[in-house]
Structures are given as C-alpha cells and as structure tokens.
Length: 88
Image (tube, rainbow, N blue to C red):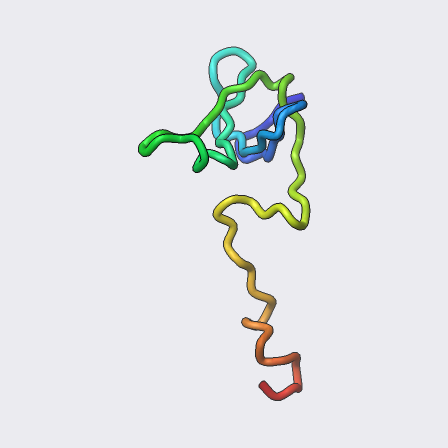
C-alpha cells in the first residue's frame, strides 16, 4: 500500500502510531511518532523509519485525539451561552 505525506499510520503488530512526514531511500516512510515526547531527546526530530509494508492506515478513535490537536469550538463560539434564542 502506498502512503502519502500527512497520512496517519500505525505500525503493524505494535502500539506505535504517527504521521508520514517524508520518504526515505527504498520503499520506506519517515513517521513522526505520536509518542515522541516520551523518548526523543531535546533537539531530536522524533521520527522513525519503516517499510511501507510494515504500516497500515490508522483512523483516530473518538477518545484518541491527535497530539497537539487544538480544541474545536462549536459554530458561533462557546457553548456556555446556550443555544439560539436562549439567554446566556
């Protein structure tokens, strides 16, 4: 299977997930590890290199937000003020 930059992937049979950021020589993908803060040293990029055959598509679950994901606001701003026509 071919992956593109920006694709979310999981390493087959391992608990490693990340985002494809570029390609390496051969049929290898450079993956920005979601857990890089746990192992990467200061100044280190936090990428791992895998053959495409070692990766599978990874869909985020509702309880698994992407790292550094910004909190999304509902349309119209904060939901603390009530719905349309309701006092805040």
